[in-house]
Length: 270
Ligand code: NDP
Image 1 (cartoon, rainbow, N blue to C red):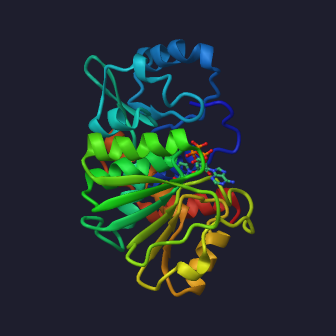
Image 2: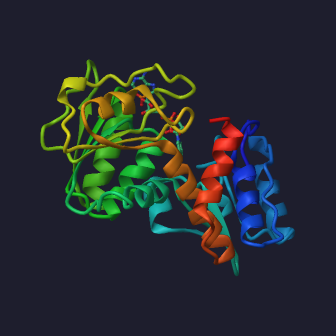
């Protein structure tokens, strides 16, 4: 459920995965205005839905309508996935988990030094999940002081990892010892030439560089990192993995992630 939802690829991806798993299940994309959210969630319950995803503008507003939250969703203060249990729906957040499971295919996060560009919803979900996976530190680089400080404080005070907010006024210089650099901003969305303001001369081969942007998956940011010899992870991996986590929560079955990625690429025309 969200508003607007036109162009959202989740239904296409999930229904392909249901079919590949031999499940006669449905995933519906539902446009729900904010004032109808309580009725829509009550309707899901009445109709026996196993769960669902929530996107903009419902990720925070849905919380009071749920029976309880998981630890990650509670720390993030946002829910993008719910599942039914006796007594009501449980709120989970799979955005950060999707990122971390894509990451773990190439790097174990424990003990790593992270530079996170951005402090919005996606960046916050990634940061909390990296913290729960025991990274050594997270530098939060963000323009807006309120959002940047708030995330750094959450990480140091509630998640218990070293974190500081760094104002973002000019091209950010990456520290030499960073292990993982993430673009968590919306820069590059629908624009393969838009560049995240970092000093590209400070990329080092030893850094793993990731982007949350999935359309287009090859961003200018990842291109600059590749030119400097860095290994990269695109935003499609995060999207597929968060979908796969929801699928497993609802059905109890591991989906075929290759089928999901293929469906996404077909839907997005890439
Ligand atoms: P938000 O609006 O919550 O946050 C946007 C962030 O981008 C803020 O930190 C904002 O900074 C920063 N930002 C935007 N423009 C600029 C700029 N010109 N210079 C510096 N910083 C900028 O969005 P979300 O976090 O929800 O989404 C961010 C992106 O992540 C979207 O493109 C979305 O598609 C993608 N996403 C990908 C997912 C995946 O599975 N791959 C899952 C979820 C999201 P400030 O605070 O200073 O305004």
